[in-house]
Length: 173
Image (tube, rainbow, N blue to C red; front, side, top):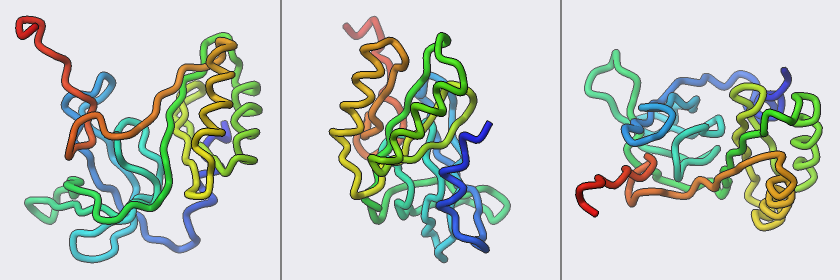
């Protein structure tokens, strides 16, 4: 599968990438996510891939990440500078084969959107700062209406964090 091809083009030759971690204890699919980043020195890192699970983080954002010891992967604490990129994520329905999904995703390049694939059906979209978010969402709305995908926006779900919102305790209702 060539799903990561768009993302690979964004990484400059010779960049020394490292991983940072985002804790996601409330997420429906995972307890955390490792994200590729460039170490800018000190506690600052520039994100170099599109997050698949974390909210309110985007390609190119500069984050502060720290670890208690030098042998631990730094944990993302806050965004220091926004890149202007936006993230959307989509799932192709089982009825859509891989070649059709890649064909559809390729059309988004005209709208300044690229993608990274986790597998044959789950993709994270990166919208460049100049991309029209509304235009991309209009296309995704059409795909969703035709039963091809489900998608989500990736703005913050909880204030000051990158996790999904915790499920409410049924006893509190």
